[in-house]
Each structure stands twice: as C-alpha cells, then as structure tokens.
Image 1 (cartoon, helix red, strand yellow):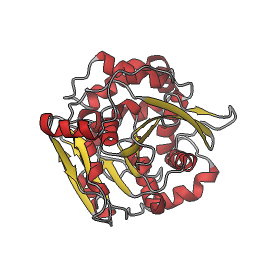
Image 2: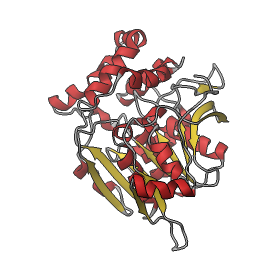
Image 3: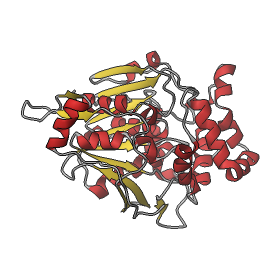
Image 4: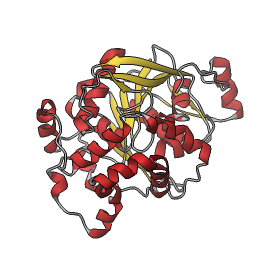
Length: 350
C-alpha cells in the first residue's frame, strides 16, 4: 500500500461545518471528561460505507515492529486506539475514525503484526501470534507515539488485545470498548472441550492446526477470508470493492505465519516465547478489568462469541453492555460505525 494517496473526502470539520451538520444532518452529543469545563464531544450522523479511505497513513518504529497506522483528528485531541481483528484490517474503522476525529479525538488505527504495512524490523524475530505479544506491540506503539491513557476499542483479536492491556496495565488505559466482551484466554483453558455445536463454529481453528490448513490458507487466503466475512456477518451485504480493499492487508509477508501460530498456540500446539510467560501466567488467572468499559454485541454475529451473562462480572469498574440491532455481525465497527463511535464517546464520560 502506498503511503502517499490523494483523498477526496472531507475528514476534519470546523465550527461552521459542525453548525451546518446540526441543522442538516442531525447530531448527538455526550458530555465527556471529568470536569464540567470539558467541551462535549459531537458526532456527525453518517451511514456505513460513507468513507473508503483514510487521510493519513503513517509508519513508526515500535519495539520489534515498524507499525503502519492510520491517524485522524487533532494532534492534541484525546487519544483513541482502534484495534482490528482477523481476517480484517484498519478499514473496519474507515467510518468510525472520521466520526471521532470530527468530535475532537486523536484517532490511531494500527495494522496488527502480520497485516498491511506493519513489518518486523528483523528477519530473525520469531513470528509470534500469541495474545500477549500482540498486546505488548500496542504498549510499544503507545510509547512510540507518546500516548497517555488512550481509550482502547476493538473487536476479535483487537478486543482481546484491548482487554489484556486494560486488565494488566490499567494505568495505560482510560476506558475500554470491547465487542463480544471479555476475550482473554489461555491454552490451558482451551483444553476443555466445548459442546459439538460450539466446536463446529471453530472449524477453521482445527483446519489451521494441520499442515494442509497452513498450505490451504497460504494458497487461498483471499477466498478463505471472504468466506469468513460471510459466515461471521451473514446479514452484511458488503461488495467486492469493500472486501478487496481490506484483502490487500493479507498480502503482508508474515500474515500466514502469524495467523497460523495464533490459532495453534491457542490449542497448545505451538510454543510461545518465554519472555511472555509471566504475562501469560497472569492472563491465565482471568484478571478482572477495572477501567470503565462498554461491551457491544451485534444481533447477527455469526462468529464464535461468549454470551454476555458469562463475562459481565469480569468488568469490575463502571460497566454497560449494548446489543446493536439491525442484522449487525462480527465486524461491528464497519457494519455499525455510528453505534461503535457513540460507545467510545459514552465510555469517555464514565
């Protein structure tokens, strides 16, 4: 992907534009911050699929990675990091980012390791997909960008990553928005068999456990991931252009290695790195999340996901759960950007 792209859509709205939006489009706002002096955030109404690109794509070295990321909003805005899952990419947030930027947030949307423009700095670095490694990547990115206590929000791998940071490093996280709730796990916990119907939903995990699966994913990753999109969001009628825009992220040279290691590690079929052992030990205890949190779930999520009642008690701080109706599937930020952005504004005010 080129870093120098000409974009034609507006991303940043001034005071006059926001006034116009109030009249013509309709707005909703929420008081955020800890004092009455903080200006309320304002979100402009938008439809899913309104935007097709980001204004700014950047690169920065962060620990073992050179991270590719999109950025939107004022440099001095309250920071928000939006984290994607598999098999998706930063374009899950192509409508969310400008909504938050127009409300004054500084929005950072990184490609995870093995996706898009993100690259390992050394060919010698182990291509590790375990949960703690990805969380440490985001801590390193926060350090590189000098972000203090951003709001973290994500789904799938991104939600798990945000969960881990909020649980183990709450001083680094102001608040959390997590699709499908509490997703921290461990290979030991994953040894427990699930009922047959639940196991069937994880068919791709077992496929990836085989060498045939690794070769198949390498050869057919475009069609494979398009199938996952359809299964995970059965009522989302995305077009080929929308999928193909994200599919370029899967051409990353480390993508297959990271994905295969992630799922094999979960089943205890692949080793992680010893430097993460202490973190994984803490995660295996299923630590509670004390930062203010909102969990979201689409009413038509076709991917494996826990029932909200099973994880509500894992959020020990101020907490709310929202079900987003309207045939919303697994890729909730892209399918319901308005609701996802609204949750971030709301949790910012907790």
